[in-house]
Length: 100
Image 1 (cartoon, rainbow, N blue to C red):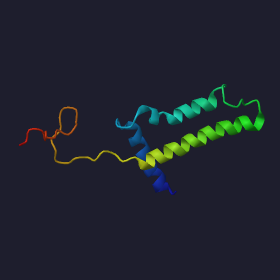
Image 2 (spheres, one colour):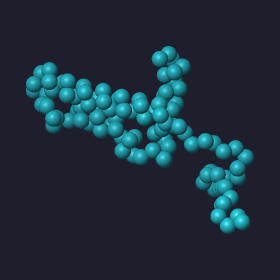
Image 3 (cartoon, one colour):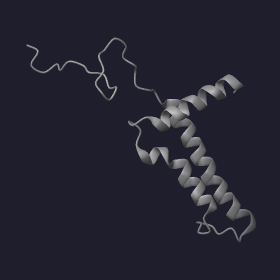
Image 4 (tube, one colour):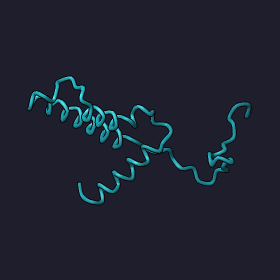
């Protein structure tokens, strides 16, 4: 990935975080992984030199892989041009109910 691709991924990531359609638990996946990494309570204790560190590394890498896939699959809501907006900035579309 070049610098332009990395910049686009960062822009898409912040759009993903700000989008209200994305559930909160999906947004917090990375935070949960970092908390698990920093927590003294692990599935495999860090006292065991190699296994404890591999456990933490596996959780971090799985969370990073998940977040990258989610951001790559993310499609922002289309911006509707020419449609009147309400006071909150949301498009005010006419109701299709009762049109006939």
